[in-house]
Image (cartoon, rainbow, N blue to C red):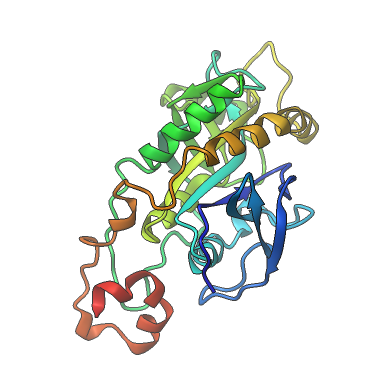
Amino acid sequence: MTEQLVAAVIGGSGLYSMKGLSDTSEHVIDTPFGKPSSPIIIGTLDDQRIAFLARHGIGHFISPTEVNYRANIYALKMLGAPRIISISACGSLREDYRPGDIVIPDQIYDNTRDRKRSFFQDGIVAHIGVADPFCTELSQNMFEAVSEVGATVHKGGTLITIEGPRFSTKAESNVYRAWGMSIIGMTASPEAFLAREAEMCYCTMAHVTDYDVWHIAAEPVTVEIVIQTLNKNTVAAQDSLRMLLHKLTTSPTCNCGKALSDALITNPSVISADTRANLDLLIGKYLR
């Protein structure tokens, strides 16, 4: 099922398709964890083969909590994508990260509670290392690409993931600011951690749509504000992706592809045949 892909793109709010893709094919995939959010489109963009997945489904009908993150990541792994570029909306918790800016975060704080966070269950345990949850190599390339297309971009910052789908209260927003969080979103967790378990590079291009609700001089966030800002940033996102593709080699040179090499702790003799079969794509090479 795999072909030579250089990357996969997961589009979030406001980005349900990738313009400019040619020679496309649609893949409806089933995984051991269910079906992904949408059919996956594989196509060519600037002579590079990439995959595109709409995180919230075509038409945005899947809430952040209900996204099948495990199926999404596993399906992209099945298709052979070595990297994932997440494009998402976020609110700013800092004065200097303004609506319309783009942020390439380097840390995550997971404040969710109702999501499946790991592929490893049903009789197998893996303790994955996520001290640096985003691939530093891919994030640097993404930062350079956004900079080169002339968009206002910030490198670094902590993205706090909340459960949603509601927006924050003012009290919550001010607590997150007091904690030192930079931006706020609803989908980076567990997506980034599952990508690491799948030994795939992962970075986020976060589009600041608003000042959340803490900023007394700005209008509190609404869906209308989010979509208006995302529409304005669509060109920058598309141009940045094209620029990024020119920077990527077929195979990453970072250590993301070895993340499981010292993470599995379960004695292979007690892993059931069903669990082995379900996770063979991820751990088969370590158990043979």
